[in-house]
Image (cartoon, helix red, strand yellow):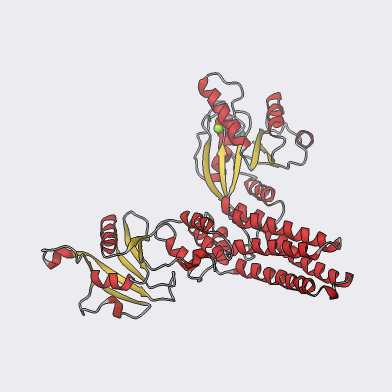
Length: 473
Ligand SMILES: Nc1nc2c(ncn2[C@@H]2O[C@H](COP(=O)(O)OP(=O)(O)OP(=O)(O)O)[C@@H](O)[C@H]2O)c(=O)[nH]1
Ligand SMILES: [Mg+2]
C-alpha cells in the first residue's frame, strides 16, 4: 500500500451535488465519520428521532434547521423542508457514512444547508473528492473512477454505453487477466534464475515466448480499440471547405437539420467560421463551415481567409465541396493542392443541376479520397454522405459499444508502454539473452498495466485525475 492510501480520511466532507440553479430538487451530500452526528444537529422530525438512529438505505422526511442561530424563535431557525437519505458504511458511494439531503433546488436553500453543515464541522469537499474516497477506500479502481467522469461528460449515447461498461469494471477484468498471464511468466523466469542449474532449454524459452505473445495480442487488441474509443469520446472535427457559392453553408444546414448558417447566392456570404455540434450515427461531430473567399477585397475578408486556413489545418476530416454545375476551375485546383495531404472526402454538390464534373477528373486530382454526389438544395444523397463520413472516420470498422473500448489517453499511453516492454521481452527470450533483463521488462509491463487501474500510480497523478471532476461528485 502506498503512502497515499495511508493518508487518513478522518474528516467529513460536504458539497452541493446538483448544479447550482433553480430545479425541483437540490442535493447536499455529506460523507465521513461525523456525517450522521453533524446531521443530527441540523435535522428535525415530528417524532424527534435522530439521523444517527436511522437504518441504512432509509429515507426520512423533516426539516433542516440552523441550530447555531441564537435568540430566534424556532420557526425562524428553519432553512428548508427536506428528505434525508442515509447510506451507512461500508455500502455507500464512498464506503463511508453518507447522508444526502434533498432540499428544494434553489441556490439559497442549498447554500444555507451547506454552510450550516460546515459550521457544524464538515469540510467543503474538493472536486471529485467523493469519488476519490470511493477509490482510496477500494470500492472502485481508477478506470472506474474515470468512467464516472466520462459518463457525466459523455456527448453521445454510444459513448455513454462504453463508459458504463468501464464503470462496471470490464476494462479492469481484462487488464487483470493480462496481468495474471504476465505474472505467471515472471514467476517462471524468476524460478529459473533462482535455480540456475536447471536453466531453461530452447523448449522452455519457446513456451515462455508463446505466453508473452498471447499477452501481447490482448494488449494490442485493447490498444487498437483506442482509435474508436477516442472518436466516441472526443468527437471528430469536420471542416467544410470550397470556393464561394458551392453550397458549403447549405450543406452544413442540411447536416445539422436546422438553418444555422446564412445561405445566399452572393459569393462570400460566410465570413466567420461557424461551428456546431452534431451527432451522425452515434458519433459526435463538430461541424465547421468556412468562408470560401479566395481573393480578399477588404480587411474583413482577409481575416476570414486566415480563419478558414486555420480550421482547415486542424480538421480531422475535410469535406471539399465542389459545384457540379461548373467545370473544375483553377481556384478549385489551388485549394486541392493545399489540402491534398489531409483526410479529405470530396462532395460534389448541386447534383440537381447539369453535371460538369466527371469522376475521372476527381480521381486524378484527389486519388483515393472518395467522392459523393449530393444536392444540399433538394436534400438528396445526404444519407450516402453521412455513411461515407462515418466510413472515412472509422476506416471501415464498425463500432461495437458492447466490447471494451479504451478511450482514455492515459490508458492508451500506458498500453503503448506495455507493448514496448513486452516486445523487448520477446526479443530477449528469442535471442537467448540474459533472463534477468527479460524479467525486468516483464515487471515494467506489469507496472504499466497497474498504472491504469491505479494499483501503481503516484499521488500527484491521482490528485490531477480527480481535480477534473466537478465539486460534489
Ligand atoms: N441548385 C442548387 N443550388 C444550391 C445547392 N446548394 C446550394 N445551392 C445554392 O447555392 C448558393 C450558395 O450557397 P451557399 O450555401 O451560401 O454557398 P457557400 O459555399 O456557403 O458560399 P460562401 O459562404 O459564399 O463561401 C445559394 O443560392 C444556394 O441556394 C444545390 O444542391 N443545388
Ligand atoms: Mg457560406
